[in-house]
Length: 347
Image (cartoon, rainbow, N blue to C red):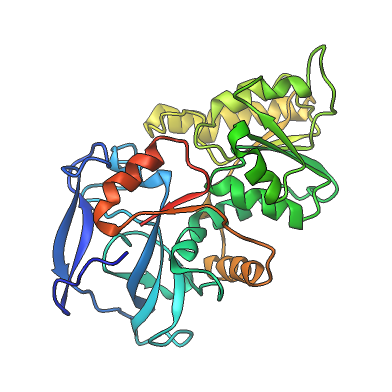
């Protein structure tokens, strides 16, 4: 929902001035500032809804101090109505209903780059549209890193989460032969409704036993997509001994589950681990490991337009979006941090 406007020239927005638990109102504060004017290739949006993502609370916790120094302005996804445009913007006009990818959107107004905007899906609510950019772009990158997905089998770890919900549908549209969804049994009906063929309930048994050991009953998949908020090294460790070298594990997670980006974990993530994996993969001893994230999308505008088109054509939906009012954003963050979210959390 919207906060009442402070005045027409001022707005309220969220800010983190010291690192800590973003669900704590003393960490996530609101401040009143002048409404910014869009420059050049910028668009001013009257924000209608903001999609929250794990990256928000990880940055607020101080896990990425070099990339995101204080103060931090959360909110990487939003939907809204175009209020004003910069001199170089011709694609949008005042009144257009759009969705955007960027940062600092958690406020009454926000400035977005023209290149990271698309019209929102026509039939979708602002809440649903605000939930799409980050998870949609991330799932698209996972799909693009899996060129052989057509007529292949894929295991999606974290299939009922934000990225997982989109990933299941993109795999289906891309022609995957069989989609195994790893999630809790409580979400079985949900993931089947969006295209999963088989559900592996990790709360009841070790899902990898289907593909390995004495009780093995299925051939290993061509792809494992690690899109779970709790993924990372644990998923690699549980698959590397049985996943054949012809397969690939595509992960959106850092190996270090704490997401602490210190020099040693960065060196391992981007130098040591990939180098060792390339050697082992070349020798036929390991599946290939690919780390991907939404920053690898070359053209955000085109990617967002593709997602909006898929939504308009009925090939993509976000059936589970949990909405909170702006002034209860701390509860929304708390829900997100619990790690047990079906779909997305939006304010």
